[in-house]
Image 1 (tube, rainbow, N blue to C red):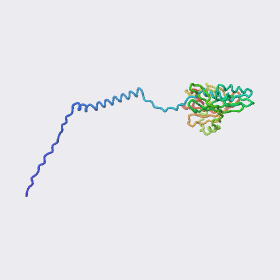
Image 2: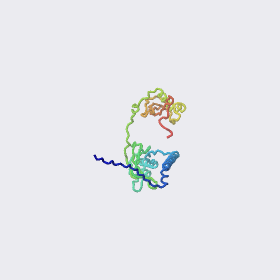
Image 3: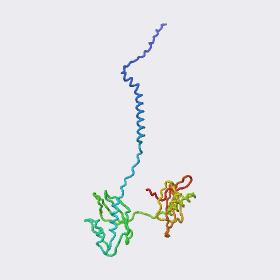
Image 4: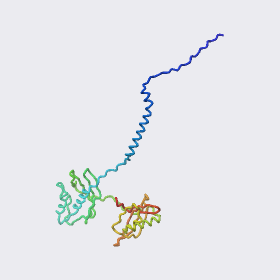
Length: 293
């Protein structure tokens, strides 16, 4: 039997590689995390200081820009309507003289209106009820004019404000219809939730009685400390409260009342009263309007 010589396995040797690095890199690797932590802490302190001194403000949406009404142009349109609709057949030239400051060289002296051969007409009052812009610096005003013969008329008048600021007619006027409207819905309050609390009903009736009677001292007992009330100029006697109904948001009560004045005239009136319950007691914080706004 032939024996096979045994092969001896040599142990594996681990190779160690030594890499030379600059000393400054070694030191930087050791202190860099500490310096980064310091930097973050300083940035946090700076941010906290900034928010403490000047905290960020919420950006609110801007309300749409609305140009203020041009009162001079409104008055100009109303004055023209007054003179345009006023005439007397006994003095035909008076109508032209009244309109002389409005019409120009390219417009008829009567602004297109030829009064009839008989009769007369005067305007009792005028009021601008609508305005629309047709071009930059030019607006069309709808003027309501109450005349003594033709009744209530609506006249559309185009007014231009020139570069220098002067006002001028931008064309002939036009008769138009009234702004859209409909009959009053007096039954709306009947669909409101009624006031069932007897204590609140008593306060509302007492407050309305003193408010209509222009009795500030008596009314003050039912008002909140911050209430701002402006008493009416016409003293009235409260005769009855027809209905009391909560507003949809539950913060006020609508009251329909009947009252009379010292001359015997009778009125059916509609008031809204803001109410609040303080320490178990009902109080009034506003009646129909806010005199401070």
